[in-house]
Length: 315
Ligand code: C5P
Picture 1 (cartoon, rainbow, N blue to C red):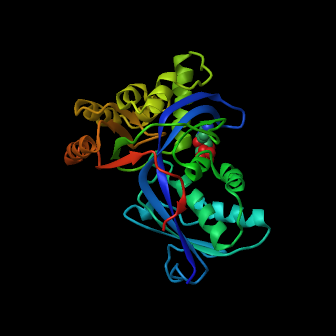
Picture 2 (cartoon, protein in one colour; picture 1 turned 30 degrees about the horizontal axis):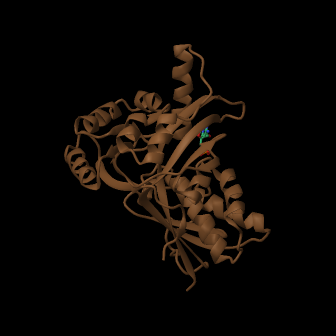
């Protein structure tokens, strides 16, 4: 059986500076992406090999998908699944009606602000490029990725990078060492368009102008120098007030992490996952245990480290 498995990381936004709403419905960003060691796996195979044809969660048609893992039921298996859309876009770009069956092993929180859907799309591009023997260079995959979603190109690239435009134009950043993280997972997701909409609404209500987004120099310096304390102080997310407005309980989650000695505490992307920067792997493990043991603070807490590489074959 010919099957290609690709492993792909989640991301956390170290800085998410959001400009005014554009005419196309997007916002100009300065988006410092950081890939962390929470991984989904996407396996692509010739039809008939992987997805059980009797499985009601499988989709008919040339690209079929099935999702496994604790939160599999929350992931769509129709054409709104970003991995399906990515495989379809890749087949279209090659001008052929290729077929594939995709199996997604899901560990990244669903609708959690960690770009799990975008990660699966990136992994599907790499897996199907290989399965179908297309041999497209990563630059071509990047272009297809940007059409699928603003966060998909970064999931191909990995590491740490600054995204501009709507987040899809990437410049890799030099960083030193490894940063240790704790992610507090919440029950239920938050819709990204809804959080951006709430951000616009809060800003309009405040009546102040929206400045052009600019990269934070202290943040870039902390990354370059491997300075976890400096990075913790510089973390910033313009979507955080909107996420807190839609999910007020997150304020308590962030506060609990700060009280437990996190170097920085932030909502990840559009939330509701909260990210905490720790001093060391041991500190992260202790923080995760403390956050996870009180069911009122979060559903569960996991540790991860970054930066890690983007989507690549698992073996
Ligand atoms: O690009 P993607 O499809 O992932 O974006 C999802 C939604 O997030 C968009 O439809 C838009 O509402 C919002 N968004 C935005 N500005 C960005 C990126 C995303 O408003 N730069």
